[in-house]
Length: 341
Picture 1: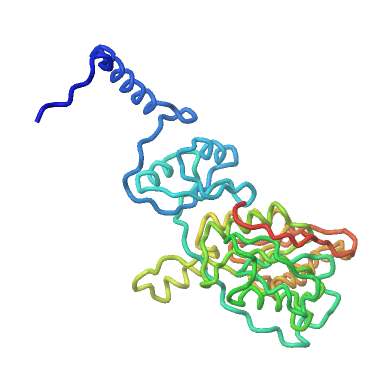
Picture 2: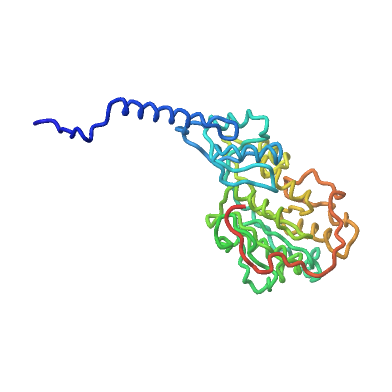
């Protein structure tokens, strides 16, 4: 069989072919060395990656790290903490932990709802005190909210959904928390507004990155006076043969188990939005924030079990609100914010 012959009119001189090959090789080499914000472009990562949260030293350091473009950023936090959520390989984790701009690198652990609180019996504390909560917004950071319940009236709405959903409550956990905090029948603050910040999915689990995103949203958008009711905790990896002493030591540590979540909770509390873990604690915080009361009510705080990450706690750090008693309407249009922060 004879070889295919190319007409002489279509033949390209070999010197042109050699030149084209050399030019292409030089172009590929130069692209491989193109810097990204001062750093050489890294090769494609061949090893597997996992989700992580990176907490930077400060906001400037976080901007620098995100600006390098090489980290596969999923979420960028601007208020709850200086940092971002990303996918990292084992080598990249080691590289970031050695970076002086980075404070902590931790896995994006799953989260779970806190154990349900029992309803507050009538006649105990301020249950039934219809004046409690007027002018205060309770941000329920949980599994969503059934905002259409009659006992909420027009005081409840979906504010933000970090999971990208509609803000509805699939499991009922967030709705129960809202009922105990601000429901008309059983709530300790029946006049408070209820803003749902959903961070848990329909499987009763979520992610650390979504929880921080919810707190980040509250920190940026909360209309004060406000209280955050965080019904979520980190589900750390199971420790084999962890006995009672290990569990007690973990409880005494008084943290959420996540440096990023600890930072987010503390920063939100220091911004004037106390973070609580139950209705009784929310009541004490709301009483302290009552607009008519210019002085701190320390007698309400004698046994204040705030969310573990807010400890140590001093009542002197609480703001003294002197605003009017007109109810503050956060997000009056009821337009749900979803997805990223």
